[in-house]
Amino acid sequence: MAALPPRPTRADAWITLVLLFLSLGSTLVVGLVDPAPVYNDPWPWGYALIVAACLPVLWRTAWPCATGLLSVAASTSYYPLGFPDGLVMLCTAVMLYTLVRRGYRKFGWALGISQFLVVNAYEIALVGSFRPEAVGLVAWVVVLLCAGEVVRWRHEYLRADREREAESTRTREEELLRRASEERVRLARDVHDTVAHNISLINVQAGTALYLMETEPQRAAEALATIKQTSKDTLTELRGMLGVLRAVDEAAPRSPVPGLDRVEELAEGTRGAGVDVAVEVGGVPGHLPVSTDSAAYRTVQEALTNVVRHSGASSARVGIEHGASFLVVEVTDDGAGTLGPPVPGNGITGMRERAALVGGTVDAGPLRGGGFRVRARFPLDGAGAAPRHGTGSGAPAAASPDTDETRPR
Image 1 (tube, rainbow, N blue to C red):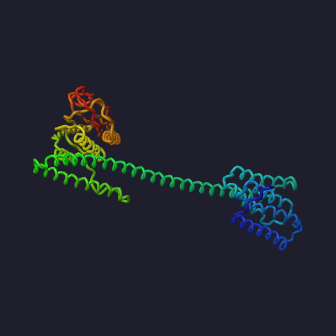
Image 2: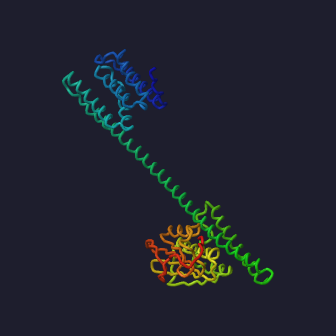
Image 3: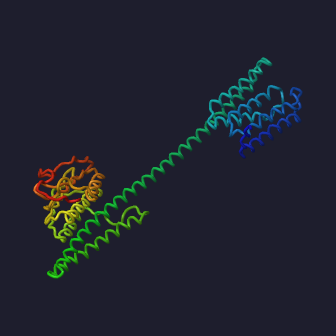
């Protein structure tokens, strides 16, 4: 069964009705007003050609090339046959414009020029002369085709502009989503670091309080007071982080990001857990990028957490060295160290991820003679990531043969 032609659009139907009315009406009016003997009677073949030129316009959207060829051929055949000069040529104008406007540029130009050549070649062959009006006709054809080109170009320009705007909007949305995802990952690390550090202190102090409850109630009371303050600080910091997660429409967090200026607070909390912590700062402190400052602070926090939880150390040292192009943070303790490489846990993994985000590196491993060291190096002023190496004292991060336990990190 043959497929039915597509349904004409409303615009094509209206254009076809207007062309039929103008073409048939103009031919009828010319025949009544100026019944010159040079005109042939348009009935029936003249009107048949008018209908043949107008009806294909119904499908100019669905089949522009086929309907253009039929309409232009019918309207071009009308005039050389001597019928009254009506407005049948409007069908040609509509189809040539449609072809060029919809992108069929070569076909439209070829059809328009071919129509001009065919009409004038027929007249030259028939009467042996060239009508001056033909020059005006070709001028109108060129103007018509150029108008189609201009409209097509403007349409393509506007479409490309809309695509660029849509792509820009999509890129901005993706960038916002990426930044939001990175911020949530950063907050997740902050939550881990805060909870791990402070809960470790609370755990140690609670054990101390239970142990000294009967024999030394004064020290037990001090341990409970430390637990109270540490838990309060933990709740405050967690409340601030959760507030940032809820405030999705805010441009920035309302609380400052912790940095190296708060390292002494970390040391004081670790001292309350029974570990003597010394903080040493070398070099001239300068302005640090917020991301680098925060990563260094979290590295110290996580390293001190591991000292309290795993090392069994009695003392620890926090060294901060401010260089011209690098910031070096080092935390060492006199604990039992590890046997072989440290077991990679969330702590060391989180420190390395934070350092990698700002182009830095983290080395963690046991020291010869006992103890454990965490050393982080962060580039400043656009310097690249430093290669991984040992401490400034030259002690390599190798497993100590004297250690007899493995400490997870």
